[in-house]
Length: 273
Image 1 (cartoon, one colour):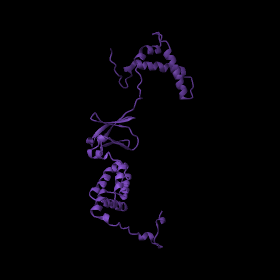
Image 2 (cartoon, helix red, strand yellow):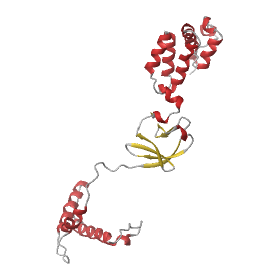
Image 3 (cartoon, one colour):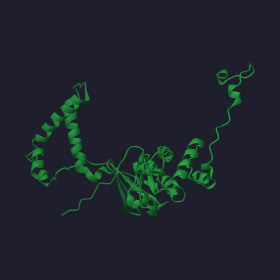
């Protein structure tokens, strides 16, 4: 049995018989349509299809049978069924693991094991899947997403993050509601201020756990003060509680005297264009 050797790029002599076959088809068909006029690509293709069928069924003088007969006798029995799924184009590129153990592909973020922080991985991106490899070993597989967002697998998370995975915005808000309405409003604001609620879970859990050290009434009062003074950091809430500011009324901001002053030399914003 002779080995099958692939032809080299740009070396037509490596596949001389195939090149001759193309030449025969091209010359035979071109000779018959060179004086014909076609008004659309579809009509040209239809004419070529008709002539190609005639050529394949034409008896070859030296062999005594047609190309179609040869195909049915030799090639067709050896053919395998077409794949059930169509060919999927795969793009291969290098990606870097970010500090949040995700890699970015087309503005979507896919998780990998947290032990690979900072590593350069190889991403195989097809129409349906994103496969990620580290030194030839597959480390993560995700369904392909084409919109901005995060695809995170629990097994890729550090242990501390994994504990947060069981929480939902609804569960956090329910817990906050048990502490007080102001705490509920504060947690709702924090959840809505992040592109993804999951990014604020750690903050919310830290806030709600303060009720172990302070009473629910004080924590609720601290959240009320934070809402009025626009304090959106956990350290700010802790500072309010440590300094006892939650027990003091919030002073209303001093009025802006200039905004209410009427004088011929004082011009409002509408004066400027």
